[in-house]
Structures are given as structure tokens and as C-alpha cells.
Image 1: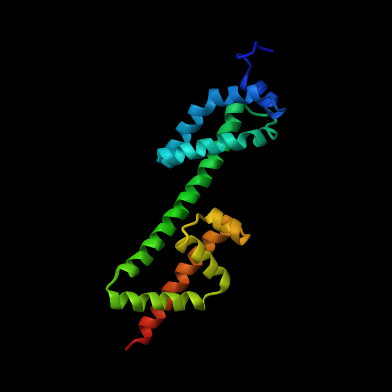
Image 2: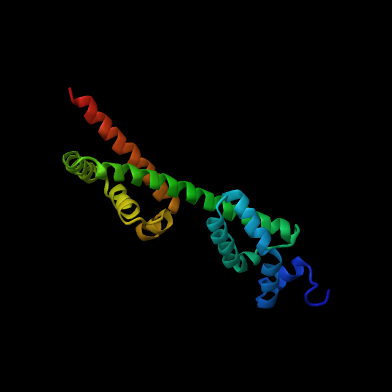
Length: 185
């Protein structure tokens, strides 16, 4: 074994998995910049990259228990970071879609006062016609501004289910609006 501070990443990973906090701290010190740089390149957003890099560091102790050493630690770490970055990208994409939906709703709110009242009444009526699961999801995400993960936790469903519900909500609202436009002579 190498002298302390000279241990291989693999040795440090096994020690960290066994609960050695000094080994874990050394791994983080060696690899944090790499984790951050990679997430920054994938996400293109420094703030989001820093958040994902921190998330990786927080979840790494639990993940180290599954490090078998059949590949180099750096390769294994990249797989962990790639998965975290892709998850974050999906969340960012979902958040952008929600922001777009919120912007659409906001445009309705800013319309002329008479049109605004009429449109909000239509939206409320349309939401009331939707199943409870879609309505509750819309309220948490659009009105309360919660992220899909938080809304999913509250509703007892996965983040992916919340994303699907928001997609379904937009689809149904557009269909309702289109049906009403066709009905108007």
C-alpha cells in the first residue's frame, strides 16, 4: 500500500466505502474539479453544474458501496457523473417546459381586462373538467411553482409521472381550446 496521501483512487474508494471519512475527503479533493468541469460541459450552466457536482458528492458515499473495482475509479466515477448530469438535463428540460407553460398562462393573465377575466374563467372551468390528478399536478407545478420532483413527492408519484401529467395537461387544454374554436361560427 502506498503512503497516506499517495493511495490509489481505488484504494481510497474501498476505504471510503468502509466508512473512512478521510479517504472520502481525499477522493473528493482529487476529483471535484473533474466532476464540476464535466457537468458544466454537459449542462452549459455554471450554477446548475455546481448544484449537480454537489449532489454527486452527497450521493457518492452510498454509491461507493457498489464500486467493485472491475474498472478504474475514474471511469466508474464518470458513469456516476454522466447519469447525474443527464438526470439534471432532463430536469432542466422539464423545468423549461413548465416555464413555457407558465409563460403561456401568464400571457393569458396579462391580456386585456375583459379578455383576461373571460380567459381565466375558461382556464378555471377547463381545469375543473380535468381529472383530479392532472388538476392537482397543475396547481402544484404552475400555481405553487414546485419542481416536478417536489410535486411528485407530495403527490406520491415519480418525477417522470409529474412530467407526463404536465404534458398531458397542455395537450388536453389545447384540445379543449381547439374544440371551442371549431364550435364558434
